[in-house]
Image 1 (cartoon, one colour):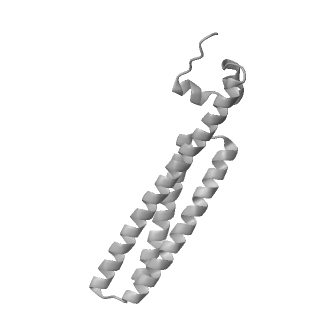
Image 2 (cartoon, one colour):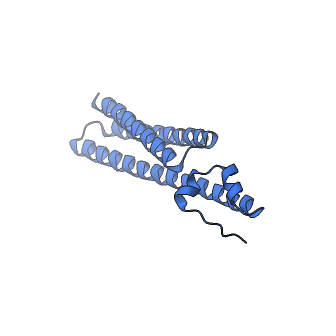
Image 3 (cartoon, rainbow, N blue to C red):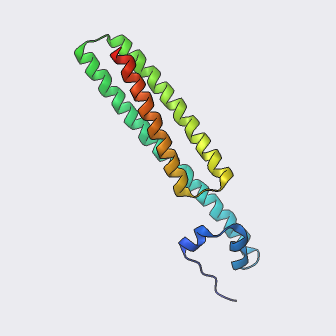
Length: 140
């Protein structure tokens, strides 16, 4: 039996037809399905890590804002209400962004790196816009 070898970079650039042409019969289908599942699992894991990091950063920023506003004693109840609304909006928007990016990725067949970059960029924009809006509301 001929040996079957491919390096990782080569493996990532092959489409299914090319991959199956270079694999032993029947085994290629099984390997391709496992690789496809692994790629999707990696993408989902990275997106979840990005979301968790963004949520943690937002919570830290919100806590700092609340502490500063409470220490300064400027309408603490209003500040807490605004902060809670900001956090809820942030979580909803992040969830929508992640779902849209994953759907676009899965339909376009993009690489794992591209989905991570696009998701991270979208989340950064969401965080900046929501934090800026909250700052405007808090400052009056």
